[in-house]
Image (cartoon, rainbow, N blue to C red):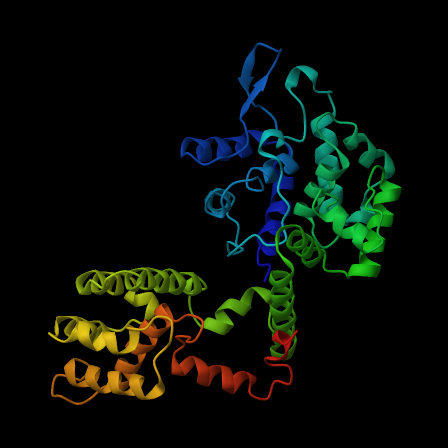
Length: 405
């Protein structure tokens, strides 16, 4: 899901009020820079040898501060600071899928001050305002062409910036998108407004109106192998069907599926990888206990579960019991062996204070171990999640079929 669109759209409109207060925008970036965040360069040149602080900025260059080649963590940190300082209401995105990024060495949309034309910055503000308020139809040839004449601005970079500001109306003609366009019989030319209008129209006709998805597909084509692309497209098809069937907004899909934090996927992945690493060498019970304690909330987390898990690791036969289901890492245990392990785990640790068996906790603990050691054979997915999925999608006609390509 592409949940960055709302905050990008809100920020773009918010920036228009700062045309005559560019110093405030620069102050935000200076603050981010002081905190060690990798924003755009903030030093200008009044001559080839004389430096000075950057004193003016346009909306495209401001957006480039968090649309450059840096980690998503840093991009989010910069955007979070901007959100706070400009009082944006939209949520921060969970990822930046479908977004092209500027070259770190060429992030400004204008040249040094000593070679800058008097109307360079104003032209960029005029173009941004027209793009944000009126879309492609609000831009005239002279304004588009004038911005292309600015040193350090080319068609790929300018259309990328237009896409950042208004992705519903503009498509980027950058180096990742153009080959994808050409594969689909689209010229990909944007050297003047007429050719760019034709490009946008051809993309709408041949690839669809969702330019963010088009951009994301172009990225996948350039960075993933064929199997990965098929998986990505199948998932996209499935989620599109879910959105339509359940009448969801795209940014609500993660919470709809998980009913809590989206980053659970990543936390669980890290947890299972850490557990798997321990089982890849001679088993150290206390090391396993430490990892499962640290990652336990992500893998499976309740107070009673944590206590019982600790009791299991304290049991004198813990290593021997674990050997039942992990001894042969080339061949997963049979259902009978798994049941035998769960029975032993219940007796050893998984019961309440009065001795009542809590087999579900033992099974959940077992599931986590099996998923970590045999990820191709087992998936640790809580029973309530399966029931939830069955309830919501049991009668959904395409549930599961999107993955059978």
